Image: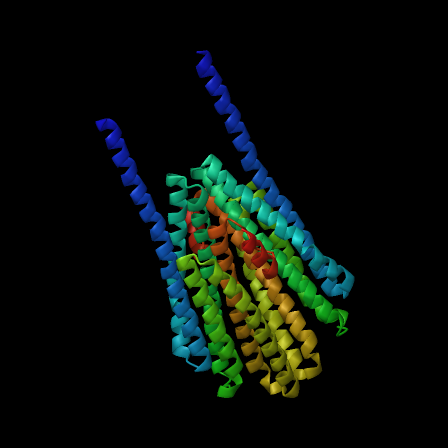
Length: 242
Length: 242
């Protein structure tokens, strides 16, 4: 009996440590998410305020995002090798590996926006030229925030709302592109400013797409379903039926 | 003895099947790679020849890339769950999971180029306006080819050559952007054509970046080193020392 009891204790101990490791990678994803959110916020502030110093700080801080991503990635591979997770635990680890890739790439987009804002500042844009892109940035940051929330709570309904919200962001992005083309054709001197605005809008739109990717991993974790490449309508129908 | 012999046979049998599974995911990555290469080639042909029909076929065929990627992804998760790979085998499965994500996104860029080529065709561009983007496409397709070769043979030296080659592609891309800005400023009527060329060049440059990502996974598999976010000079130095 004693031997059995000991083994049981040992199993419980290992199991607790394993649970702790799974909790830890989830928490570290949220730390990375918070860091990436800050980078996006600073990059957008630098863009709309022509703040070159802030933009340079975003570029310099990108390494923090990269090294945290690499470290979480290594932790995930360690967990797979040592704990040999299956079912739901394995889905969590796979979801984490994929989520951090998207977060790191969102960090890259923030760096791109920061670089564009340095170029833009040299063209002295008028404040009102940036109103639409500022609005787009606000909505995209909202999507990223909600995507991270849905990850934190593994909340499928919230994840679906993000995918839905991204459609509005896509329409806003297309409207900015059309508007800037009109400006450029009316006044060729506006071309450098318009191009910086277009590229920034493009980076923001990509951040929206990547926020959706994160939501897809949340649904994959919670439901065991891979919903990539399926229309939103079909996904909602499928999930209602499960 | 018989019992031992039987178990041994069983282990050999399982091990052979497992080896076969690992070989199978590697082969399927190359099938996906070949499909993605075809998509990129057709999209570029559609772009330079104003071939709307071909562009529409690229867009329609994107689902093939997506479904193959999802299927390989599921096979990888199955292998992790059932075979519990460690060390080199685990690195292979992780490298495959990451490689197919990049291949699928290269497919998305091909679809983007196809869409742009449909828009471009409506503006009747002159053939010589596309010379530089055609050259860029040729070099990018070369990078993708080499990246897939380096994956097929898990060849670290070839992988490093791709990362090096991507630098030239980046310079070519920047030169196209500068050139198109000049054209646009000289003649605002050129703006729609120039923008399509710029966005296409951007997609091609992204395909180059993603080919480099694949090479980073090859190095990760072969050397167990994560070289992302490290300068090429540092990587070459590190690899010489190992």
